[in-house]
Length: 441
Image (cartoon, rainbow, N blue to C red):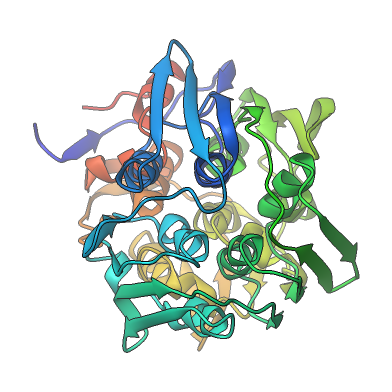
């Protein structure tokens, strides 16, 4: 099967209701926490992407049994100290930074050497940001000069730490919280605002965690060595996956979409706030609370009068995975949009800021860049006629999906490589595009 697709026609107007894939962040966290719970956990709607499959493979190697029955996954947890490890065990996290970083916290007390490896992309990402705070617990852990592979030996006598997370990385914060589960005493964290799925999930499991939310940071305390029971959890839709259809609808004339049952956690809805500041009118319908997480249907209507934005830096962390498609919306907006302090984009699966600037210039959008700040000169009349080839040898799923949205919204003839990359997070992405009427070969 070829690893590319062809798109030769713009998408026609559509009115649809869709479901997107389940939340990847929550899926991986549920798998990891279920593995150290006592008893069976029943997880509904678990995302069946490569990243989550790698998480399931990892816990299986650690002695945890799981099985799928119909739409449910049953994970048979063994408690905080129940993971079994053979000597010289290797866990492959594939492309998943979430899995690779969080599982290091889970292995805080492992008694044998475990090596964490990943694919080419993951091996280029920074692991010192999580290795260094874990060392402070008394965990024996070392990296390859800040990169994978990481070897962890665990620590017999762990001590609670005070940790200041200044990047806005939910992965670093979560790794520390998972290590704190197996540590006596109270671990304290002062964390810059970022995704809080781990904290909310722990709270719903009655793990003794306290969270004080300030304007720019959270103060978190977790009391360790408290076992917790297996749980039932239904994973809602992923807003990062929804983002592609939100923007596609906005910039496709006379179109409307309702995306059902999406996680609208405040730490993830930066894209909605940014687009609404650009004159979109995106609505939440049927809002409800589920075990601390907010869930809703998202309604979007096309808008050919988007305006430029001076994007607040405070929204960066809550939209970090969505900026590629936000840039597409800015390309159709009237005026010059400004985005600042986006260096973290280049530490994702690929150097996304570099790729985005190159991509926008390729389709005729003027972009000014100064270090990690960019200005996008929007063109409300953008209509492409040429031929475009996208070869992304980083195999970045979000770059592939952004390219598809641009092709369907802006026109032109496109050959887009790395179709298999969507298996990382959104295996049925192309299938849903076809449901909207897209002609994809």
